[in-house]
Amino acid sequence: MKVKIGTKVEVCSEEEGYGGAWFEGSVIGFGNGRKKRTFFVRYEKFVAEDLNGEALVEEVCLKNMRPIPPYKRMPKNLSAGIAVEALDSDCWWRGFIITRFRSPFSGEELFQVYFPDTRTIKAYPRSDLRPAQEWIRGKWRPLLCS
Image 1 (cartoon, helix red, strand yellow):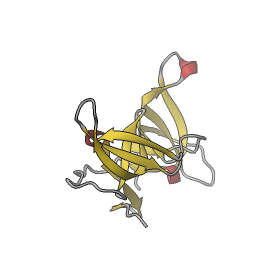
Image 2 (cartoon, one colour):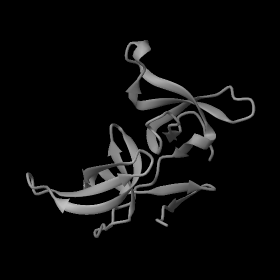
Image 3 (cartoon, helix red, strand yellow):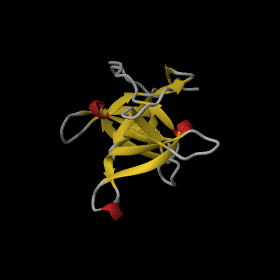
């Protein structure tokens, strides 16, 4: 991945409780990593508590970054086992659809998604889902279930 100042990226967190979550940000500088390529990333939707609400900036290893995935339309017939990423708490979480149903309150179609990294299940509308893709050797590839 070629990275320059201003590149929009997603960063995978290594913090406890955030495994498998991708946070959107922009590269604002080159890091100080000696053996690993690192970059300073300003997150789009997170603020640093100790900096009076300014955008959070972190030094990130290249291995934990990927470009923003290209838009892919969700298939019309979503079924159990399809790999997705769900937008939750301002980041994208990787999971697998386990079932779909209609909300008894709104009638809206919802999809229950299982998240293996956190071992949780939560329901989402189609608008909060995107197809899961992996950035492999400079190309986007669909994530397939095994």
